[in-house]
Image 1 (spheres, rainbow, N blue to C red):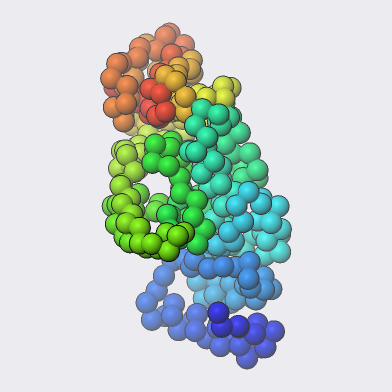
Image 2 (cartoon, rainbow, N blue to C red):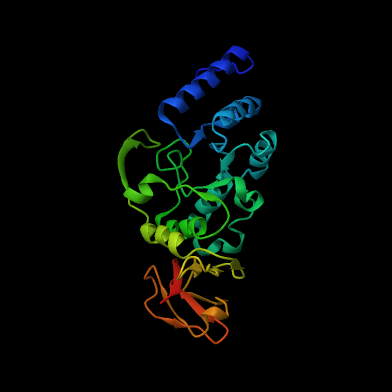
Amino acid sequence: YADIEFRNPAVREELKYWGKWYLEEIGFDGVRLDAVKHMSPKFYNEWLGYMRSLKPDLFAVGEYWAPGELPLLLKYVEETSGRMSLFDAALHHSFHSASNQGKDFDLTTIFDNSLTKESPGLSVTVVDNHDTQPLQSLEAPVEAWFKPIAYSLMLLRDAGYPCLFYPDLYGAHYTGSGRDGSDVEIFLEPCAHIEKLLEARQRFAHGDEYDYFDHPNCIGWTKAGVQEIPGSGCAVIISNGDDGFKTMSMGKNNANATFIDFLGNHPEEIVLNEDGAGNFQVPAGRVSVWIRK
């Protein structure tokens, strides 16, 4: 809880000196700036300007944690003139709510009041982080059943810069104090299908994006693919309720093609019609990523 006097020019110059030293010593591509809402945006405007005089393409993301408070994030973006990205705390809040409300959450609103929707080029998306996991200071974990859905919304769409949470890849086990003061043992399992979703992002989630956000419990979108990546393109469909289906088009270049669920959640194959449209399906409470067989 040490106070840093950013109004003192000697302090600002020392922090510039430290940034230059650190960059020259180890080299790095970007910085994560913690708890930026407690610091002067004027300082970060000055500091990032200096650091980018040394490394013009330096990436910066700030942690301004304000769940459900999009106006505060947008105000900070304004005050820093877009010099840094921000973690989309507003979207995380929607993920947390959706995972707890189940079919009562309207999936068509999942991106409403999010930085990803309002300023996608400056949004860093997260499903969870070290503060939101169980027993931590901002505890608001996304339930395990919804995590593959949340990651598909992050990884397989254009908007936002996805940031993965380590335990969602590798799991975690720790003990901490519960609200009653007693020790609680926590086991976090890796997110189901996370490796497949990462592979799908690399191989298939390319090209123009078309949304089918037309049902509160079943939404989808298609990625048309690009010529430079053979086999690219996919159709993604999500359900937070019962088994779902949605007619979506993959374009005439996929006329009469056979599609399979890359995640294996739906075992049957789908054959598209002569216009490249098909009746894509998804099991209850899951996500399916349909690719050309």
